[in-house]
Length: 240
Image (cartoon, rainbow, N blue to C red; front, side, top):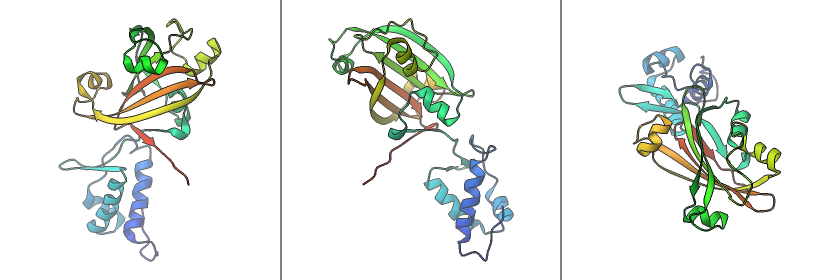
């Protein structure tokens, strides 16, 4: 952790780069608190004002969080999803090197509400196979899923849902999913979701709806995911 005062790069930018490397390290990626400002400034041989410039930028970028009376913490490295990497949840996590743990798995049949009935083009009240799962890493759960399946498809609820969903649909029924339309929103967790995700009812969550179609344009799955906001980032990229 050394800076070069003769460099053309301003000291606060050099400090930024050092802090970026620090919070990406194994020691800090789960949200560890940084050393006190006075100690960190002394170690870097810069003023506290220069250090604060670097910290402010990383707070702005969402990489650090400052709490009065607590200090400055690295934001726990979360899961990143987006339109460019549309995969099943299991495939997403495998690509990111995250080992998935199932905290809950429930299969049932439920009556379709108007929104689900409209998506599948079935009558409201028609029963659908429904899968509910609470999933996360080895430390804590971070997403609660509800998946409704088109009752016109041969899905029975007796399938092995411990394997990746879309692989199972392909290998067992020849259903190849191709297109996903998504909606992302945010809200407070509330009591039910808070209990599932081991957070406070007043904590923020991200809601990710997926409308999944097969290669022939037939609707396959209506999926809602409730994610801990401190563990999931949704990215979009646009080109012109």
